[in-house]
Length: 293
View 1: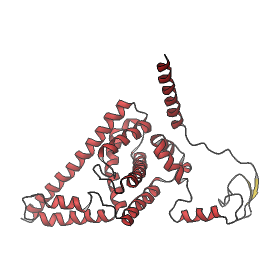
View 2: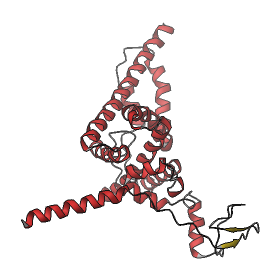
View 3: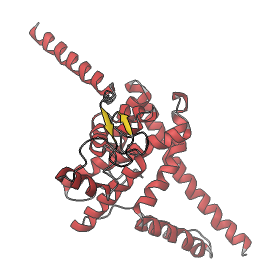
View 4: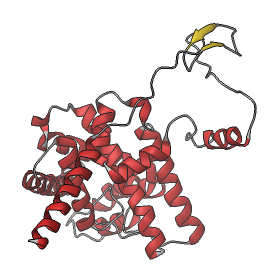
């Protein structure tokens, strides 16, 4: 009997935690104190001047403002970056749904956050000499070693190889391009859940930010960049797929089983798409042969 009670209490605790994750960030109550704007002199009630946007309160230069201004260099001073990082690790799918539902000011903008995290990851990799995963130039070498059975394949490959090597040296562009590729696939798999293509794009960028954060943790544990298998995510494919299952379950309100099979379908379609690109490259080589026969 005692064992059953303990199991039931654990279940109740888990249900409580699950409900907490669904709750959006609390919005501060309106402030009714009267202020005179220090910038434009306009009188108003609230936290910010409606005339020029200046924030109310003590505007002296303090240590807190010094840190805030320093963070502004990286685009981190004007949005709650650390709250966004916390929620992407604690309640990722619910957080993304809140953002898409209108809570824009509660969270750091997704594209800016992706840029900051990407720069930070590869800055650390450069400083500490972490080994780069198999991307970019390695993919170019792989394509180059394929026997295309064409005398003009080297010419066609030269253009493709230059693009791949350029993307290898510009990580943010590569990650954005890969997200552009996966967004239509994600929208296709989850199109019945009410999000349009652009909203799906925003959700995928936030998911990429979440995986960047987990990558940073893995870097500190393994003291290396994790091996990339499932692009555009810098981590082993099995871990990335597991994280995506959690994200999609929360974001789209799925059951566990629905999240599993839809995520696996999503992954399968991504790999099929990359194979299709390889097929198009093969056709391009053959057409080049015909044209330049």
